[in-house]
Image (cartoon, rainbow, N blue to C red; front, side, top):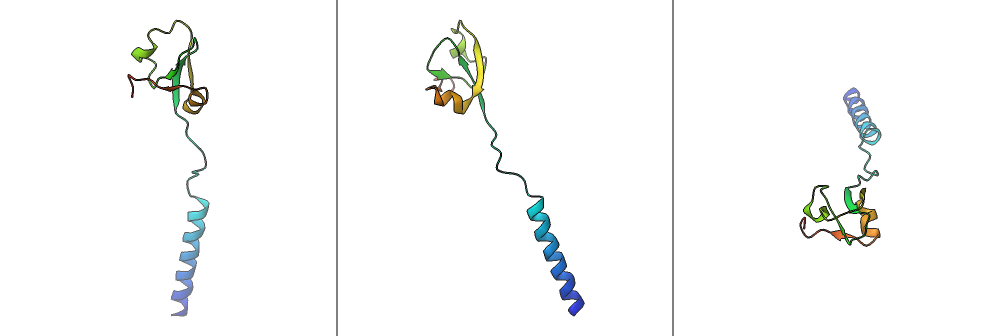
Length: 80
């Protein structure tokens, strides 16, 4: 009986150690990228081929959604 208890304790301890050591890292954020027209505008676009970007006569830049929102952009009405 004592041997069974020790074995169970080791299994539980091993389980706890492996769940702590091999858990996925959730601290890393995955950023979403969007497209903006560098020539001005107030919108960002999820798709580079969005019809809202057709009138852009300057460079189309890929930025994070956080950056786009920080510079005052909002989602294009065609993708809303």
